[in-house]
Structures are given as C-alpha cells and as structure tokens.
Image 1 (cartoon, one colour):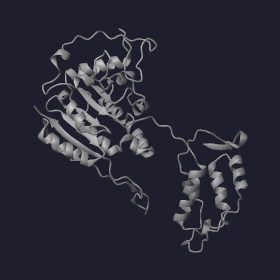
Image 2 (cartoon, one colour):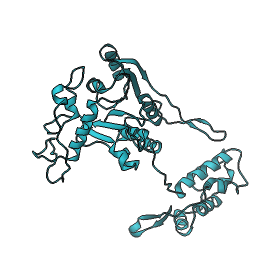
Image 3 (tube, rainbow, N blue to C red):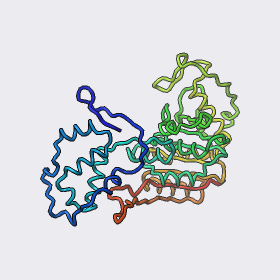
Length: 371
C-alpha cells in the first residue's frame, strides 16, 4: 500500500500487487555489517537522524518501494551502527510497520472471524475465545444430522455462524436460532459468505410472546413436563404466504396488522415451532441474561440422552444453575469447565509468554438429558 499526498492535504493510499513474500527486515538486515555490543553509549537526544521530516516526506512521494525509504533512514542514522543486533532488528520492525503497509485478502472462516471479533472488542461476543468456542461445539455434538436449538444473545452472530458451519452444506440438519427482540444478530453469519441453502437451515425465531397471529416458540414454552399443550399442538396451521413489506409490517410495539398474508419472520417462527414440537437433538444457551429461566423453558424440547451446553462469563451463575438442575431438572453428568490459555511469543532466543493476554474465556455447564 503506497501512500501519497492527496487533495487538501489528505493522504491517499494506492493498493498495488505484492508478490515478494520476504519481510522488509530480512531484506535489509543481510546488508548490515556492523553492530554494537551494547547500547550504553547511545543517547536519545532526537539528533541521530540527519533527515528532516520534509526529507522523509519527499522520500515517501518519490520512492516506489518501502525498502528504499527504510534503507535511506538506516544510512542517515548516526546511531544505527552502534545498536546491538536485537536493537537493529527492533528498529527495522518499527519502520516496517510504519512504511511497509499491506493488505492481505483471505477467504473468511470461523477461526479468522472469531479472532478478529475477539481482538477488536471481546465483550461484544461475550468473551468467546476460539478455544472455548471449539469446546462448546465439541460438547454440543452438532453435526450434519439432527435438529439443534440455540438461544443466543450478545455474540453478534458468532455462535450461530459456528454451529451452521459445523452442520455443513448439503446436509439434513437444521438449527433453530432463538433470540430476544425482533431482529437476530447475524453479523458473523453473513460474513462467512455461506451458500443460501445453508443459510436457510438457520431458522431465526424470537422468544418473546406477543399478539401476532402466527405461532411463536414463546407460546410453546407454556407447557408441562410432558410436552406441548394438546390444544396448541393439534391446532391447524394455515399455509404461509410471502407478502410485500408495504402490505403489513411489524411495528415497534411488536404487533402485526390484521391480514391473511404473512411476512418472513412469521414463517420462520412457524418453522421453528414445527421443529420444536418434534423435539431437538441438542440445546445450546449463550446469553447475557441469567440462563436459569431460559434453560427451564427450553429443556422440555430436548430429546432424552441429548447434550446441553450453557455458556456464561460468570462461574457463580453457572454454579447456582448447576445446583438447581441437580435437584430439579432431568439432567445428568453435569460439570462446569473452563479453559485457561497462555499465548507465547516464539522468536529466536526471545521465547516468552505474551505480556498482555486474557487468561479466561468464560465457563461451560455441560450435561445430558434423561427421562
């Protein structure tokens, strides 16, 4: 990426193809023949560089490559030859970061999206680190066969994207993605660029009961220990029909105009209800809300001997839920787990743990349903 001065003093960057994969540091460090033993005689007085800011700016406009710029900076530095080899490499790395900017285009995948979202703002994905995310998928048993129920809020779509990716394309499995509010979070799911048939098997349904004519998963939550109310289960459902958004729309209060036509969100809710009536093969909960009420409402929709996984950033919340489920719910083999990961810098003679890192990434409560 080559930076030039644009109009009105603004900088303009031009992207050009770059085929040489060598680091700028490696190409320059081989030509350096002199280095110091230590840095005791180096004084940081700001006078070691003979080039002025105007000269450097002129170099950036005239030179076609960043290697030429950094080479000129090294040649005009009075203290560079007195630095140790480590200090010289550190100096070049710093200049490389400033003058050797490049953009790398990669095909999106779950690992890259999870790392980017965690690095940018971890609290927006409930501090779900990649290793904890893989543990969650492993315990939930999500695969290309069966139906799965997910209640998610606060991960910007990272969890449904991970589960849909694990389900795979051209399979028979489906995912019911329950969420609070009218609009599901799908940022990470859309960023994967999945096939449409794969996206269609992620059925988003809100878990809030309202006065809509369509069936809602929230209505199915009103059940006893044996399943759905017989009256609701046997009630015939009209054939869904798509309609333009101008004919009927969902208002801010969550109500729908009286019409025989149905919008997409109503059709998705009916599809979710049909799956929940037949029960699912796994339950995953990741919410900023307290999971106790959510788990109590959704557990009857899970078949016997199926896994449940509940993620939360607080150990105390899951510990209370653990004791409650031990004494109340039909769940066995309960356990609370947590991953502790330490990142290391791996460099010649400079291998050590990272100075700044997050050691914890939330907790998992896992178990299996029984009848």
